[in-house]
Image (cartoon, rainbow, N blue to C red; front, side, top):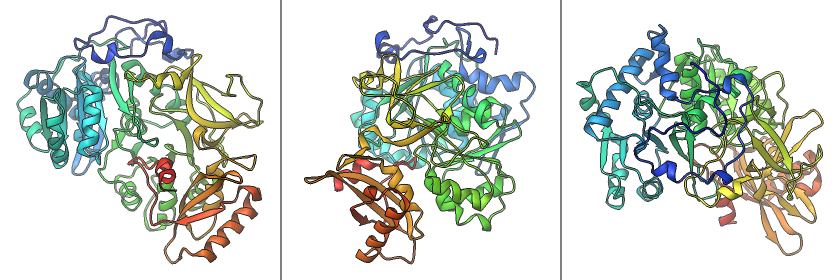
Length: 543
């Protein structure tokens, strides 16, 4: 990339003819302070991230490198470029896309979905990924919020989108892939001149995963996507061009988009995109594709640990966890099963990707890590002042990316005094490591004690009968709140009063006795998002 210094507040002339999204960015005073203090973060005023992530490799002679793999698909960088270019022609010439239009992408992880994403970005559109399991009502809400104009949808998932269409008046152009789109693209030229977008033109709209029940649309510039590639990946992950990336998070989730597409392509590596990546399917896929870098959620690592002996995982060398807190017990279990220390991290849809993390040498059970180069992080009290080490407060972050909600008053909650307040309660240990406590609205105050639900969950997970669990605070007249645990048992165990009492006693022996769950409910499964995050609001609603 030909880098030219760009002042943080600089706004080059937008290439967007449809200015809907740009017009609904937060007011300048409501935006977070941005930091571009690494040399690699000095981006040019004109920037299209598809050019940098994909076309650059072909232009520099790496077009024959293996780029994307999936079911029956092995595409080189030149193959992916040609496919994306043909789809971009379909978008522009057949579907009438103009720069700035929002394009809904609907499909499970696959090489074709990746090609569609690149096509939208090349054409100057705004890619709006959606989780495959969303129903018509949820798609309508996104289409209304984003004023979606176009959609590219896996034919196998078309039914719910068709049900949504009568209530989506702005969505006039829909093509299905898995047949229709490929037929249109087949006779299009394999060359496409990418739209000359500004670095701060929006290329991506990501909706939060709904752990609070009310998703928000987050906006990301071309510059944001590229900024993420030069912070956490080279300084913490340290993958190589010969690595093969694989994992479970959907591309509609920024954890998946970064880890399974943007980051591998930024270094000329290979990405494996598989449609179903449950623990029992991810392990054989790692062996089949000889994957070396894995991205998945803590619950998956815990489930896979018991099965690793049945699979050839010799190719695997790096494992990344994010999306929710990594229990120390899960870290230990995975290390004992594979010899691999998990790279943990916290990111957010608002910030695009990971901003606090630790590499294998710094990893410590129970701690998330240190601020990623390019980012700053502090823990603040309710008045906005930094708290001393060891005290719990609100995590606040600044860096080259930051929260930009689409026309949403909750911007004022997330961004305060230039800081991004992620909604997480943390403390900083004496070694500088950030230690997760809970979501700030999930801290349990019982009998005058502050209790972090994840700490209780971690203690429960150490018991051999517990497969997974979720902990919330429940209102209580005597204590204000009590700790309530929802537990899923391993096969062969029965949830009853005797086991409940045994679990309570076990927790009392593991952590401070006042933190034990005074009520335990046994469930067949926990409510989770498609990305594996525990939906505590649903536990609270049913409490």
